[in-house]
Length: 182
Image 1 (cartoon, rainbow, N blue to C red):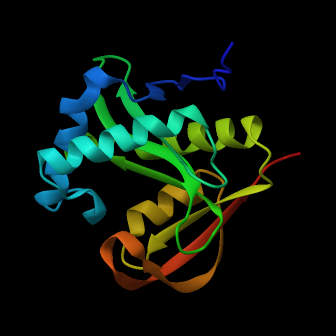
Image 2: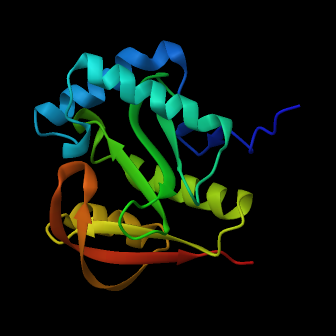
Image 3: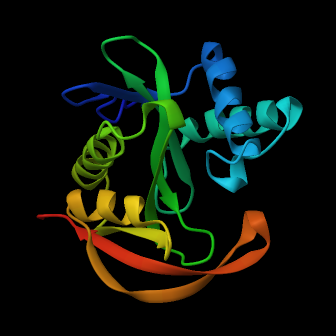
């Protein structure tokens, strides 16, 4: 019997769960939002590449390894059943630590969903996996995401410069950590 890792995560207004094959059109919409400049640049890809990326993420559920790999999840608004973003945790390519990630579709921003999802994912990850802390890295100009991490219990540690492999560029980041209670 496969371990389910206490999924889905349920918060007051959101359900955070594994992506499913039938979610691809919503997933592709996130990629299109990136092309339009409304979402993380690393997701800016056309449909064929998005499909490959989607199936790559689905394949990661076999191991559920947030230390050496990633776990990407769909963020769903309970009241409508609509996918409003993505989130998860996984090995930061360039820092070699487990990092939280999240993104909310532009039309659903400003409702506190990013903070709610970040809190849910953080609690779930720290309670489910043998990790002492989770990091968050945020661009210096991304004040809203910095506030999300701070409201989610992450503490600012320092500014750092990291290469973002998928974009083949280096950026200055604010580096945060959230420690578990164990």
